[in-house]
Image (cartoon, rainbow, N blue to C red; front, side, top):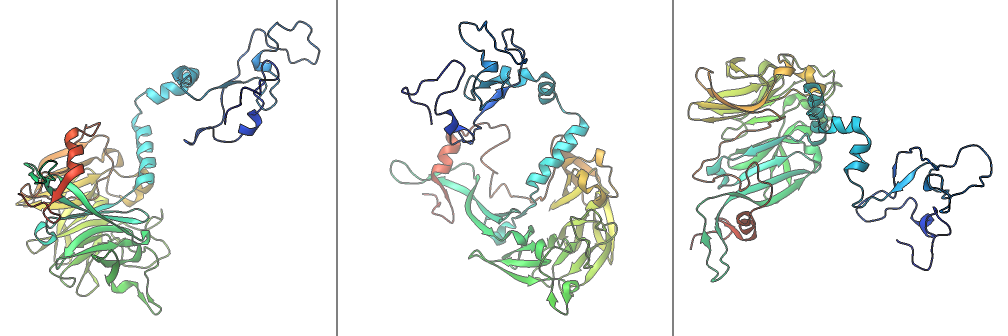
Length: 437
């Protein structure tokens, strides 16, 4: 709200007559503050602080810094928050802070920023892309409140703009075709197709849920250790039941967890015991078949053998009888495991400072965010991709190039290209009218 021309200022240095109506209110709808002040500075013609009547007032009246506006601090000058407010008004006025803002942060500062950022977006994501069973659909879970479940499919054509006939695409980029929202209390982690049906770890309920096509869910499996005389404990996370090694059905599947004991000390607590407490449950018996792990993740079945990431020690290995046998040790919190022919792809993440006690076998300073290709037989590292400023990797899955060429956007793209805009404006998929003409 701006003052009208009919209400001029009463005297030099005093705000317009409607100024009190604006005090404490947003000036615009973009959530801008009502006032922004420059720090006080000495003025050569400033009125002295001593109590006396000044007889030699300058022709223009009292300087602004000691003006008669009682609603503004006496020795402050108001600044406008529109274009005049630029670098000299902000960074230029606080050189010490400006130097910190533009200087490359050190390792300590970078670690703190990563931890703070992770606390804001910490978002375990899981991917289920067993393509033959999924019908060329890539399911991605995002652990937010509410939980989000996205379906991606490869675009095969663009809708015709002239004659209505689809234009076949040479590439097959992944595009979103559906989104579902589920209660945040599920705390979804891993996803897997069991018997052709999508399932997920409901970590917040210590159970495995079947994710219905209609958008709902149903608890279908949980370990015996959460059963009490009052019934199963589904109210909150006690076990960190976080991954699925998918078999033909639930009975032939396996599930990893950080513990098999209900306790007042739960995952997320600083004093939650982890070293050697991790287990893998059998789907058939609902009891542990492997013990001695530390914060296990990403259990997977490959050629009849059970593999798992022993995250707290940066290891990946397989199960032999009732014991975990490490195949390789990597520089970081191992999470994410996928196979292609004789190569195992393993993700590593940085150890979050506030959860360093959960990784007793890792050097937090040497941990990296990356993906490592290992010889599955010997554990030898064949190659690695490391992101120096990366933080967390939650899941890995292989996508056949015969099905998709990946996402339409690539690293370094600052703006959507005309090609990308055309894709999202008229994409077609095989399940949504995308058959080639």
